Image (tube, helix red, strand yellow):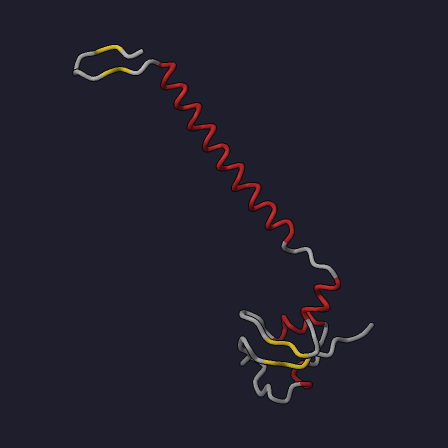
Length: 108
C-alpha cells in the first residue's frame, strides 16, 4: 500500500522495497553463478591434453601459428634440431605464422 506524503508523490511500503531488493539480489546472484560456472568449465578443460592430441599437433610438416617461436615449437614437439633440419630458416628469430617447417620428434 502506498500512502500520500507532502510533496504530492507516493511513498513505497518497506515490504515492497524489500521485495524489490530481494529480487535484484537473486538476479545478480544467478548472473554471477552462470558466469562462474562458464569460466570454470572452459578453464578446467583447456590445459588437459592427451598424448594423441600432442602427437597430432606435431606432424612431420608443421605450420607455425600466431605467437609461436622455434623454442616453443621445439619444446612442444620434442625436436631440438628444427633449425638444422630446415635450411630455409636463415634467421631463427624471423619465424612468422604460416611458415612451414619439418619436424622430427626425438624418440625415447
